[in-house]
Length: 330
Image 1 (cartoon, rainbow, N blue to C red):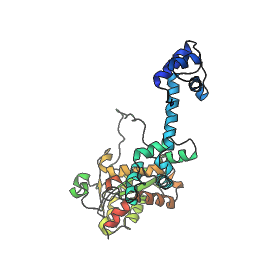
Image 2: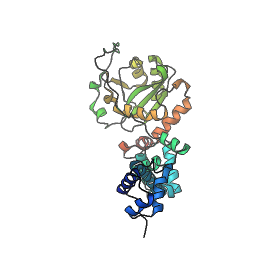
Image 3: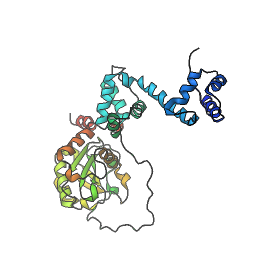
Image 4: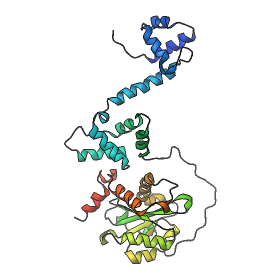
């Protein structure tokens, strides 16, 4: 007679009969099981007849079942597939980005196929250790719960920036992403608000430029942003949309240097610069909150910029920003 796993009901019976003082042999006869099967079940995981609980035993059995299933996963059996997934995770690609991109890079190899959920499942059932810790740290982190908004507090009074041009005056082609060359800008604030990193994102191609900053003064930000912008082809320097942070107070000088018109979003309206906000979330994978940007080298910043622009994006039909950008200038 072939062996099959104990069911939930059988574990409940074992737990109940043990509580009644029944012997293992009596329990085995009641369930029509071998005594050894009951003995192994009760003694598993360091338990005994006094500590055995059905719910705990069932969870333990489910963990073992997942481990057996894990051992048969294609990603475990295929060294090439596993190496590809590990390499892209270390580049901070999401499982969804990996799953779509691998189809393009191995279009004729059906063994190089994997679903995003399979990657997640593989990571979470990895044995505890350095590899699991490293790979899980590569996943995008999100808040586990919403933070309460503080209502009733008086808003901080800030001086308006002179000669601001409202986002409401921005051409419709910018909102529609029809014409490339329109950017969004922002600062990522560092530890104790003492340092910052600039981020510029092109709305159509999602090309990202990360700008190291010595400080957050309007002059420093204006010069650093202008220096990076002037490296772009003229056709890609049309406009920038920014929030109303004082670091963009010298926007007229920026426009004079780059010929890029600066438009300002409404206060407390981050969705009006949604591309930039989303990209900042990607940047935070590499430079989490609390990072002291004054201690991050320009080389390290530009390496992250390269990784982001070489990463396939769902919004680009799984092409990379580099690929979409360069297609415009072939």
